[in-house]
Length: 210
Image 1 (cartoon, helix red, strand yellow):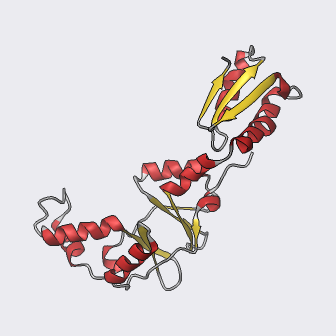
Image 2 (tube, one colour):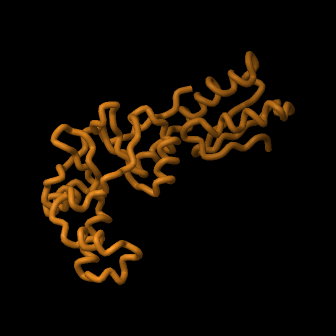
Image 3 (cartoon, one colour):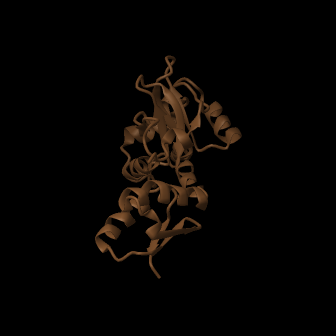
């Protein structure tokens, strides 16, 4: 069963800047594009970093509060560099989270959670940018139709666990919730079946019997 991959939901060929791009231009790109972050690329097209709107808001805060009383535990040098930054390269996160395009949506969500990031940069083997994926993009998997989810459950999961008798179990899907009815006496099979169904893209829950 093929799972949705990052390439299926990412924004390809996103707007980008270089390390030398003035911050005023970066702000213009974020505002006009209605986006929350912009990748920073080297002249060779490789990822150098990421500038997020939160980075710019932190700069504004530090300019108003140069002593950093409300900036947590940021060292003075970092507070100074952020407050005086004039270009994308001076304020960017130089180590943004990246993923290959064939990463599954589920794996990308785990990575995003682990890095506490709202954006993942999608890169090729050569380090060049292929696209950007956001948390909102990853949620698109839950917009799959009930019909598409049911087809995967019946054709990919039931046929694997029930062999030539997938019709022993009836499947209904409503708003992403899968309900199983029929011959569910074989609890050992059911114990494997339910997790497999949960792994189908777009499934929100599985209810067996009732």
